[in-house]
Amino acid sequence: MPSNAKLLSLLLAAPATAEILFATSYNDHAVTSLNLQGSSLSVISKNLDCGSEPTFLTLDYAKSILYCLNEGWGGSSSLTSYKTSPSGQLETIKVLPVLKSPVSSTLYGANRTKLAVAHYDTSAFSTFSVADAGAGLAQLSQQTYTLPSPATVPERQDAPHLHDAVLDPTGKFILVPDLGSDLVRVYQVGANDAVTEVSPIKAVAGSGPRHAAFAKAGRKTFLYTLNELSNTITGYTVTYAKNNKAPTFQRIFDFSSHGPGGSVPAGTKAAEIRVSPDNKFVIVSSRGENTLTIPNTFDASNPATTLPSDPLISFKINAESGALTLVQTAPAGGRNPRGFSLNKKGNLVASALQDDNRVVIIERNVRTGLLGKIVAHATVGEGANNGPNYAVFNE
Image 1: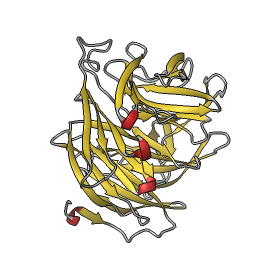
Image 2 (image 1 turned 120 degrees about the vertical axis):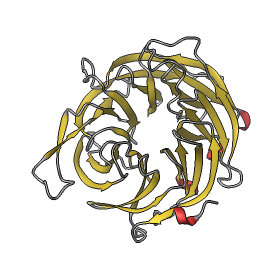
Image 3 (image 1 turned 90 degrees about the horizontal axis):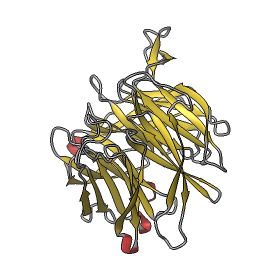
Image 4 (image 1 turned 180 degrees about the vertical axis):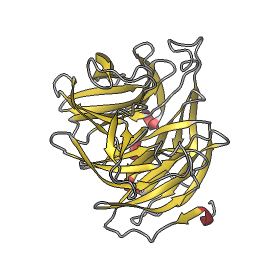
């Protein structure tokens, strides 16, 4: 177990009634624990055991376990398991070396005892046993992919680039958007949680699917992908076969991340996509636009100034067809909202602003889907650029 000397406690432990969040940031190489109380978001502690470039977090709340992926740009990549606590403090359990550039993961299998991981630069999909987050944390399988030649956007699609891992609502299939191959790879979870690849979804050429999310509306299931290279959203109806074979995916639309007919400035990169807990709304984030402004409530010495912000864009889901209707384009709280998440009630959004060293909490109307004001914020990360890239509520 890594030394406790790496655990840098900055404040007293948060009260048991606090709402706890965890955030990752590259520039200070830390997993930061945050305490949300009303309009106050404060740092509890930082843990450096995830490695040089901590990125995606997967929380097993029922077991009080947090998993952190380290992309390892300048060194070794790793998967770190933590024991969480009501105070927000993290106790490192194990650091496992893994194939370079893991960027996303999801729990799957009976009792959520397996973890699927997408690797971006190394074009791979791997699985791990997490039944025991300590000594039993171990790799189970690894599949590496190649491209015979560059795809539609050669400078970004020179190789397969797996960018997300998402479990479907039945728990029987894992979907992995492959930005480099214009595919969404599909894996079936079978007996004893064995994973088998089945036919992929062919994305729109040159779209570069980055992240994906499912919505369940009654007996109907829809899949939405956010595509980084084309800055578009693609929607699919999902039809499950009765014989447990792979579902079919029928494309129903493909339009701008700002809605039908929308456009984005040059240099824009679509980032995160989330479906609200009630399965009625889709929210996406977009990086590099800087088209919105927010009051500078972060600097008491310059309260009258404004700051640039990228957007969070909300859509309402048609429960019959899966179509999306634009609801709102709202500030994300700053620049480069690479990752964001919602709490279980759906009334708060935690937005990680990579270029501003800031995590903000934004209020959200559950009924209308409209985002409101920034209710709390905290400085996360140290130094220029490559600050916080992901934030998740501990629930």
